[in-house]
Length: 306
Length: 311
Image (cartoon, rainbow over the protein chains, first blue to last red):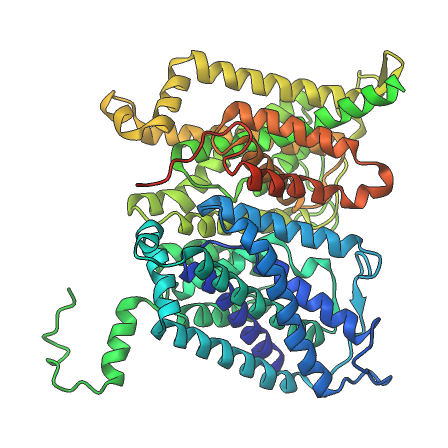
């Protein structure tokens, strides 16, 4: 059922979930992830085919080192873009920010469709492969997910992450406490873009072809669904949500045409059935207690959750 | 020269009218519930396909029931109005499934985005199962009796364009008058203004909310039928791009403002019509570029009220 190719896709889904989660952890609903994902993917597609400065071999393979450089460059380019865009749009609040970021996604999509060097509607295909099989992509995808997860985990313990949480709870109060909210929001936005850009590089090589359809606005909301269904209170939520929701449409393949209807139902019913997400704060607390080996707690039978 | 200008203006106003319908659909729900209904684009598609079927169109070879069609063949306008009504009912179902359960438990507004998108996905993919992914052109007899084009002041205008403009104009005028003059319309506005006070005044706010959803869906359905007859239905996803443009118009005009949605729609349609043909590929980005700039200069939209910071 789950082959290596699907596993790679699931890991990419988890990364995109984290990219939407990062600004949300600072209270900012940004749907810009598909734009930065598209920018990263397009950069990789161009650097490995038309502008082969990093040296692609003719037989369709691609050196690992060049691939690694691309992953870094994709993240940096998306991050630089986010720095510029973010300093403009992060003044907006709530749904206005969400719609401004949707606008960004559409502008990037139309640009990729119309720029003279990005291959138009067909896009760029025959992107060379750094690995012999899909299994090879598991290593960089896992590494990138591990790194991003570690950063998110560290953030929860660091002043920056605490500042993000404070802004999420009450932005005005956070500002009154002396938190530079503009800077904190911008850092979260740039980190989010870097994750999406690097993920785009991975995806472009993995998919072997890249076009403007890769980053469209409704994928942005699907990614938001990763976060909401997984649970938006901790970084583990979007990871679980991304893994599960990327697998669902593929696992539903046997039902044929009805699979996207069922996927829609999952997205529709998810927030109704799990309003706090699969990884809810209550679940984390329970896991934390097991992890800490707290044996002095009363036995589960008599235990009452408040 | 003047003919070209007139033609451009009318083209712009026609597509602008459809954008305004979609934006009004968002506006009605946003003003009473404060959230955006992402299923509206799917309802737009539904309206287009329903109009096609009610006019006696049959399902293509890739559909779930190839060759099947309704045993009736209504003329365009009755089919359009009936389809809009049915889309309004579908919109009520969307409210039931995707909004009502969240409203009952006072969920955070983020969840509505997800559930409404989910409802839209279900609807679009059901349409795809039934009708297939292929494009549909309306039966040629659709506008029997109307000349193909009329000449106004030397400019050749497709009569379907005038029809589109007429229906959009009528819908907008009826809606505005209804909101301003009728008892129910004013009750709806009262709920949008202040739900608690409205409730104290004896207004059934739940009924008003459902009414807003029904009208919102009917407006989107109207848009879908109009685009279907004037251009064609390229596939079940036709409503997604119009839904997205409507979103841009919604913010451009100011969230929750009815005159803003109408003015924003016309402005957007005219701006798009001004794009020269050499750059037509970039036309779809224009709406969002304008939106982006407007948001930066005037975050509450052109005709919106200033948002007051919480103190």
